[in-house]
Length: 434
Image 1: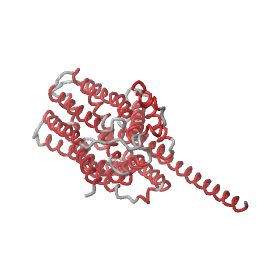
Image 2: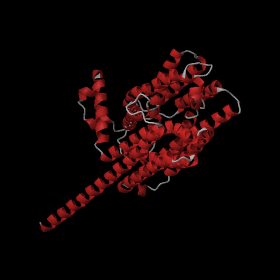
Image 3: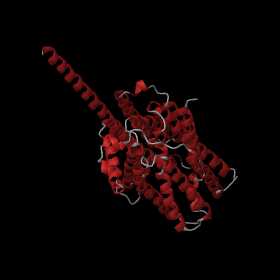
Image 4: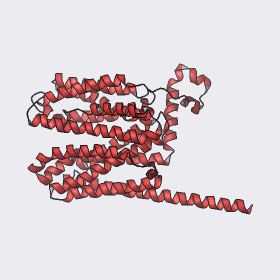
């Protein structure tokens, strides 16, 4: 086994364990149960603290992760996760829950270090493979979480508090593992050389803030002057926005379509689709690099978005719950395949030591967009307050819109290349005449 494969196996196993949190599918019944005994409205308010804390802390995290070389932030995530589940197990007050959600925001925000750490440890030619490995591993961890948690509760092997003890044990193991991960060393050619900073500025401690700002600006400019990075980042952000909005509310759609029967099947379908997503992400690592030329990729992303949109619209308008499951399956499979390839392509096209910056910005844009979308169509006090079928119709047409956008990108790319060939031909003719 090659060194990069060994490292990918280590980090994939870490990701599998990190995602093993069997208490999460039952967080609502746990909070309104006897341990905390709060209302559903209070539970929603508490969980919203975690969402806003996540977005606020993500800004700080993606600004410092590349500078601190990933591993320290992975350790912070492990410690925050351990603290969160310690408080779940041993606290009982509403105030403690609110504080717990602040740490949960830290836990989620620092997760960006895990997703970008591997790109700093392996050669770029392996990015597609390692991305497929870690995405497959985390999906497999979620599958085990969904399956085991429901089995334990269904057969009354344990209660919701017992699931939190299991999650705490997994987070403790993850934290220990994080300390054992190999360090990322600085590149031989440091960014300071590329920035050509003043020699005095390089050695003056008081200039640390200025140097850091220069580093961040350099990496931001280097990444986002590339139209390739911009296009892939747009896809990534829209995927974060639409996919997680859809998966959050799809049980409500299924309950509307199938009633009580849907309640019995929803959990099983989600678990099966998570497993399928794991397998599809793994298969994405075997796509030939020759198929990932810009024109082919843009065409593929446009087609995938259209298929996702059509699948979701079918899942929305049908009155048959099984048809709805199939339509949603198209979305899950297409997303698992596309997000794996898009992530690796972004990493291939950004400078070293800027992975967390670029992925962090893309994630933040996606989260902010999702918050606005949720406020517009899903919130009962929002701008439009649509019912569940109307909401999913909006999401479906949103995905079709993404397909149209990337079809436009493809046409622009084809036009740009045609112009370049014409200019080259004219230059050759001019040189021949001369």
